[in-house]
Every structure is written in structure tokens, then in C-alpha cells.
Image (cartoon, rainbow over all chains, first blue to last red; front, side):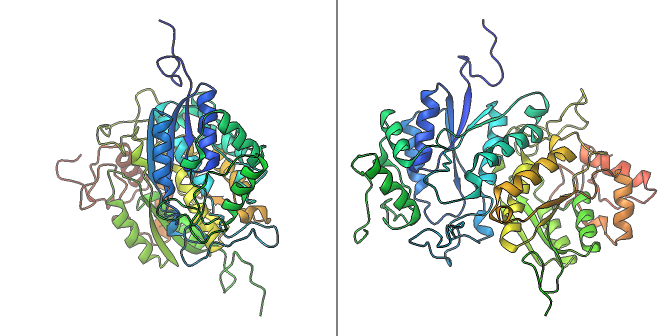
Length: 240
Length: 240
């Protein structure tokens, strides 16, 4: 019998944890991880986000992609507030930050918290790969979507874990980081992603219908336009 | 009126987030942060730990130290298992790992998750200091208690946050890292810490009484002996 390393499944396939929000980017990252031959685990977070309808979409996506396991992990980021996404007293704006700076939808340390939890699960199941759908082109200027941040997290992961001390290396894959939204959509469609079953909107309603106005909606809309693809997003009545 | 920076309180005092477990180390770290003049916020975590009685102790300590705010943040580390502290199917051993390696009480990526959440709160309240009572002398060999790990987290924090992008630097203070348990106790007593109101045991009962047998109990017991101080710990009947 061939030797199987701890980070491989019984068929010798590498395992990966994929951060799955239920949105356009993360589902594409999952499709890419699968297409690259990884055995995927998907993780979503219930963090007091106002658009927690996304979790329902994430669960359906995880099922459709036949992941080895799917978890929704609770983490009380809303204990702190400080973001329009977790504090209902802060409105979601209909445009990017006026000064081109970091908008109020930024959730302090969110990706660090999410990657840390993905790392915990990775260590338990023996995965050495984590996929995150961050994007530094058509994005909102969040600091924790940049490659230098991701590299710093990889360095931390090696020092933080038993697996790292024992010689393991964690790789945080960011397959979308240099792609435009249109490119992401094109790649995803090529891999069979059904974007009508995803939700990106910060103010999605209980049916997952998008507002059409927030930053996330604008990036997504423009992506479908530029990809020359009909936008399958279901919008709320009265949205633009 | 003197200029007050964003990371200072209205009296020009630096703010700090202190990770508080309710145990001997973290209460000493809190006492030291206070004695160094920081305005302290204390954070504890409900992560499915079997010894969650520690949260009651943490709350009392936070009150006694008159922190600006205290939060217990929920985070589902027990979703993953993989540790004797979060998975009731794995017994807490009565000795250190036999091979001198990392014991089964290691919780994958725990300090990374905790520091990430402390960082989130720090950013929201404008603190640039985080205190964590990690110790690399009388400890259990956890990788995320080493200085090189802490330094990697500081580097990450700068890249991860809006505050970092805007020029802020986060300092993770580890005042205990090179102290023996006896030294920690001596310093704490000098600062007025009442160690009878702390719980370190991994198998503490509902009253916070210690088992006297687990690794945490052994380090603590030896600390009081070596500090030549009466051990104020309340032990369970039949414990050694």
C-alpha cells in the first residue's frame, strides 16, 4: 500500500479548507480548489453579520460541491461592533468610502479571525491548504485582502501550530487575488458555478435578494456586465 | 487641552486589551498591565472548554480590577475537537506528554484565534496594546506561547487592520514569558492578586475546585512551593 501522508486523504489527495461565505468569490474559490484536485472541507461563519442569509446559500453550495464536511462556526465578532456589517446602528452605505479609504463595511480583523479558525480546523483534519477568495482588484480596499497580509498569515500559521512545529507548512491559496470580477465570473462559469445560487449583497433580504446598491452589489453587477454575461442575481423590488 | 491620540483615553492613558482566562497567569498579566498604567479592557472566551467555570472567575477578576469593559466572546473552537480541552471524548491526562512533545490539551490555533479576536476589539476601541499571559518556562510546550510566534502575530496585526494601514503599530505584551511560575506568583502577590480567586485546573469542578493532578495543576502547585507561599487553591476531595 502506498504511503499516505497525514495531510492526504486515503486516496493520496491533498486536503483543503475553503472559506465559504455564500458569495460570488468564495464559491469560485471552492470550484477552483476542486478543479485543482483538492479534497475540500468548507467553513462558514456566523458572526452576527446582518446578511446572515448568506449562510443558507453557503450550506447549499457546500452540498452541491460535495465537500467532505461543512461547518458553520459561531464567532461573536458582533460583540465589538465597529462595522456596518455587524452593528445595526451603522448604515450600509450606497457607495465606496468617499476618500477612497477603507469603508465602514470593514469588519475589524475579520479575515484574521476567519483564517485562524480555518487553521484550527485544518490542523485537526490534517489539511495543509486553506483557500480564501480574497481579491485585490475589484474590491473594497480592505487591508486583509492583500497578498502581503496573506503571506504574514502563512508565516504565523507555521509558528502557531503543532503541525508547523513538526515541520508542516500551511499554504493559504488566494486564486482570485489578481483577477477582475469579470475574470472570476468567467472562470467560475467555466467550472460550472451557478451564480444565481450565491449572494454577495450586504443588505440581502430574507430570500437572498440583493439591494443592487451597496458596494458588494456594485462590484458584482459590473463584473457580469464586463464579462458579457446576463446577471442572474435576484434583486429586491425597487432596487436599481 | 492637550492633544489626545486615538489610542489614548481622555486622560492620555494608553488603552490595552488583556486576555483573561480566570487562571493564575492571566490575572497576573492584568495586574501588571494595570501597574504599568494602562487603561484595561478584559476579554474572555467561551470556546466549549470543559473547564468553563473559569469564565465565572474571569468575570469576578475583571470586576475586582475595575476594567473599563469586560466581554466574554463566544467562539466555536469545540466545533473542531482535536483537543482534550474541547472534546469530552479525549481525557485530560495526569502527566505531560510522555515524549516531551505537545500534549493532548493543546487546542489547535487557540491563541491565534484569541489574539485575533482581541485585535478586533483593540481596533474598535482604539487600543494598540494587547496583554497575554503566555509563559515559555513552566508551561506545557504549546507552540503558540513562544516569543517568535508573538512577534509574527504583531507583524500580521499591522497588515491585517485599518489601524495598521493608517500607521498604527500593535504591541502584544507578554510580561510573563520568561518568568518561572514562582516568579509570576511573587510578582502577582506584590501587586495584590488574590490567587484563591483564580482557577487554572483543566478539570475544575462546578465550584472551581482543582483536581490537583493535571498538568496545569502541577505547574501551579510547584509554583507555590517554589515561591515559598501557602497554596490557596481549593482542591477537590480525593485530589492529591
